[in-house]
Image (cartoon, rainbow, N blue to C red):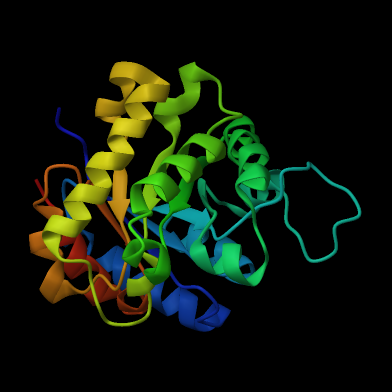
Amino acid sequence: MSRRPLVAGNWKMFKTRAEARAFAETLAENLAQADGVDLAICPPFTSIDVVATVLQGTGVGVFGQTGHENENGAHTGEVSMGMLVDAGASGVLLGHSERRADCAETDQALARKVPAALVAGLTPVLCVGESEFERDSGSTKAILDVQVREGLSGVPKDRLGDVVVAYEPIWAIGTGKSARPEIAQEAHAWIREELRSLAGDTADSMRILYGGSVKPETAAELMALPDVDGALVGGAALDALSLLAIAAAARP
């Protein structure tokens, strides 16, 4: 089944509002390079409205980097899904490895966050992936199966097709090392197998992104893999033309 690629750039804790505006303007001026590919930018909370305003009408998504499952409440430092929508977001990253490691985000918390994002009208991107120790010990498939199954456990079956999954091998993030194509394909195939056990044939239309030090020079080989439907890009997404080069590599 043909799946439209999605390339999402995660800025993490980078860019002021002025820098975010300049990036978005450059992106908007060069979008022809990404014809046939869905694009999304994941700015810090402080720049969501700026990026959304500049990119309004272009079709480029603006995603939050995380969100809280409750609509409101005494949760200092958190932002609800509804607040993301109000700021101009159309999607949200959930369970990024840095959130799991730095903020102790659990699969059980994600089981609440993913359906909350859907209720708010956001596209959730559930991030899963194994550490170097887990890969070396042969636990990759078991880890991915648990993260996918638990993270999606609160999603009604008829909404599973609205979720995007991103595979990010933790041992590759920020290291400059991408998984070899055969490793990436194997992991994506395992994830699709688990999705099929949950969603049936809907799994064939669900997008699974690769995220792990994706760069323009490595993107084409990764994007050509049968179960890789785009990329979640970190460092290379801080430059608009670099992100567009990766999107160009993902074009069908």
